[in-house]
Length: 285
Ligand code: AIR
Ligand code: ASP
Image (cartoon, rainbow, N blue to C red; front, side, top):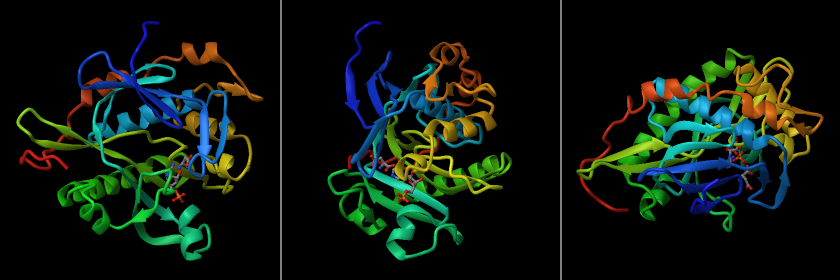
């Protein structure tokens, strides 16, 4: 393999320079972390599962006109994505109370929220991703009001779509985290695209019938084998064979490699459908 320039090494993904300007390669690692990197492990096959799940979901979202950074999957661990200027804020959308919401406000886990709740967190491990308001985000120059408005609008559409998708598979979408980035047009037009990944690392998904947690909480709270949960989701999405890619902790690399990149055709067809200029004024945050 030719030597590629590494642009960024994150906790669960590495970003390499892409083959063309304006593109980067997102490599999904098996590294798993929780509590801002305090708890760590390498879980064989996790990166492959997240790569497939995220490619599939991003493609579906493109299909309904939500612009994402995803271009196409390259191999079992890598995808080609657009290089964006990442907005340093995580948007969390919640349907059911879990995780930090319960801890912060004493709401019992499992409480169905009166309406989906949007929260923002500042991306900083050192500061433990603090909860921030839209006022903080604008005041500190992390995002402009029209960008925030677009992010929230996109998040509601993602929530509507994913709720339906997962409900149809017998899963409850408890909450999820989104990241966004800016793309600048030739004449200074600004576009906001969905970035990062959408996977069981970034969503909470519970089995609707049994309540079993299938997402990263398995790792965070030692609830059971992580890949078992992720594979249940991938299987329901039709992304892996019934037998799975990981059996008793052993990852079948050959089988994973033999799976085609089923998403690419759709990704090519629908790309750019949803792009919408958020601002025409050239500016820099
Ligand atoms: N999340 C937040 N930061 C990183 C991630 N992955 C996701 C969690 C959960 C949701 O955002 O995986 O799905 C809310 O997390 P929390 O910890 O605020 O309850
Ligand atoms: N913030 C992520 C999580 O807990 C990963 C990490 O903190 O290391 O899901």
